[in-house]
Image 1 (tube, one colour):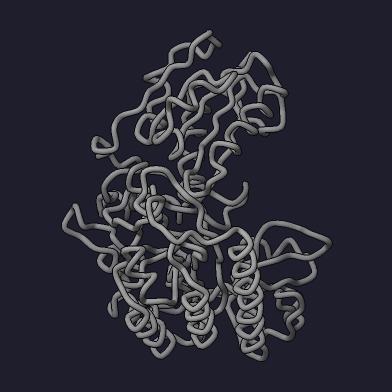
Image 2 (cartoon, one colour; image 1 turned 45 degrees about the horizontal axis):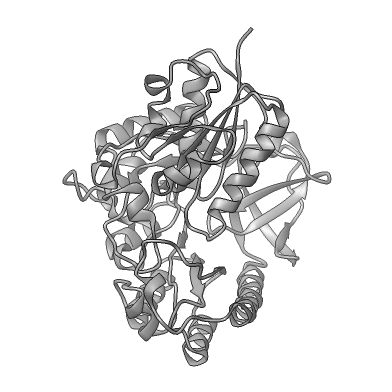
Length: 442
């Protein structure tokens, strides 16, 4: 009887794409993949180190796995495992701890998935994280959306971030391999491919390429698909990329551009590579060049040194920007970062209040952007899922729409007209009964 394996992934879409690749390796070695809440022979937990609850989350998930099967072999890997291997190895029930490189070599390192009294640690130092391991994942079992890893690691030195310690230096998938793997995803029927990485805009710096060069090759691939960039630093979003998005319909007119703070003082303390003037300039260029562009923004509130005035600078800066949504994070202390040594900590109460204010602002900005879409025609990719008799999809500029469920719409593009907005979901005018799909015109 085949052994079973189950996976739990914490953190970013990059982690999800890597878990998908690891799971495929298990299947290729005779394992049957099952749900994490079922009784499995092996549990693999792919961790994150971004939040202060990394250790707590990891412990809870290990306990949950052991409740399902006390004799299961427990593997913990990912960014938290890379940074805190010794701590994890002492957790009751953990059998193996694998670092950022080693998680792709499980069957080379572990021959017998049988519980032992002591945990095994397979973790290389961050300075030795030089390999690039390909990965992609999907949102579900359909062929709607794939997350395609093209870059890993980061050379930036942001004071709040542990990612460079957990993932090493910036490195990229070779351009010819990226095009080949991208083509395979298109041939398998994926209609939206999201390019992921730790710092996607840094793609190609180690192999004489760049993101713009790769994008030009990817849009030349035959097929009906669109490309979405998962997130890109403002200093790396070039005018060439903006022009490409404006001119080619295979590129989604949507960017997610981290800001972190609307205070120049705080950006300097964070060791970010731009100021608010630079950031505003790139946002306005995007809006002026690209029709109906959707722009999401990351913000961190409550970093050491952030006064009420600094926060209000951020609030007012964001309020005036032509953006479509916010992702708001409260600062959390991470070991081995510069920020943890900084003075003037922000109280938990102030963090909570500031976070709530920005989240309300984010809802207002999103609602305004959605309402600006009323009456416009948008190309929607519908997803193969049914919830409360509706089918859902997203426009190129990342507006969510719904329509009464019809299976012929699933995993197909359709030109729709936005009719109304309710609870940040757009309804659309009635479609023709034959639900004909729409080809791209390049």
